[in-house]
Amino acid sequence: MTSPHTEKSTTTQEEHHLLHRSLTEKLYMVERAHGVNLHLSNDQTVLDACAGAAVAIIGHGNEEVSYVHMQSYTTAAAEQLANSILEGSPYGLEKAFFFGSGSEAVESALKLARQYLLKRASRKECILLPDGQSYHGNTLAAMSLSGNMARKVPYEGFAYPHVSHVSPAYAYRYKKGTESEDDPEKVIAFVAEPVVGATSGCVTAPRGYFARVRELCDKYGILLIFDEIMCGVGRTGSYFAFEQEDAVPDIVTLAKGLGGGYAAISGVMVHEKVIDVLRQGSNAYNHGHTYQAHPISCAAALAVQKIVRREGLVSRCAAMGRVLEELLHIRGLGLFWAVEFVRDKASKETFDPAVRFGLRVQQAAFEKGVAVYPGAGSADGIRGDHVLLAPPFTITEDELETVCRLL
Image (cartoon, rainbow, N blue to C red; front, side, top):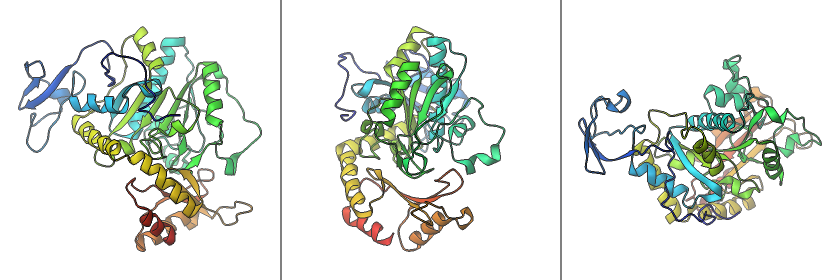
């Protein structure tokens, strides 16, 4: 696949890629706000008698802080961020919705999938098929999709019931000749991380796996949702991780690299086929948050994305990833790699979870001057240890050699 900014639609109309709750209502652009007044782009001044959504208790435009509620208004930062990511509608992705965390983005994607299927096929059943060894968030529905058992134990009995996990696309431990099937007529979405992150440690699917998944989703009218909270925004050496698979999602979630640590922000990118169904129905997305598309978060994320593009950091990530692969010969893509630890290579026997081997490696590395990301449960959700390497895209070859020498 080509980069998301080269494969574009042929539309000549002015692009507006930010998704609002209503697809038809025209929102007012707030250019600035002060005290109780909102100053709009049409030169109108509006007295804000609702403080957004009962939020702006100290008024707007305070020199120390600022807030504009995004249900009835929009801001240039949010619009520009959406347009920057989805310029030319790459791979048919038409609209973006912004939230404050990856968990919120995944929940939003699930609700959007449900709304889509109700509008399109009146499908009442709503089974979700996630990869069995993955992580999708801390909220209850997102956690229900996840295979990270340690995080789920305290909430047993509270999980979303309509979830049926498939075997992980993790050839090192789970390669099988057959796979069981749920009734496809009851499935609304297949949810997966193109490169599974912290739960199993930078696991890529066998070649052709997601292409086959895409075929099955198309055959049975199932939505394909890629969770790129951790592996997206260039982390794997392409802006979207799915670009390295022969499969385009209907919905894709982004987060960590979106704000680059400078702001709490996540996003849901939605394919035009999903948006078209909303247009044909209620012309609305029945979901939203008080702090959706928060202007400060969007402005910070926009600045990060401008730097990523200006400095060519995605291609740099791919190049440094090839260096790291040669140095360690481990699994991953781009600057998203992991080392899994076993007691015996032949049998793949894991360490006793009580040993906390991955955490010990992390602590020892930190004491010697290198921070790595520890993981546990990588084999089956309970057993297995790994450490994850995901440095900034600006890391140098010498710095990568330092990391590898220590490990």
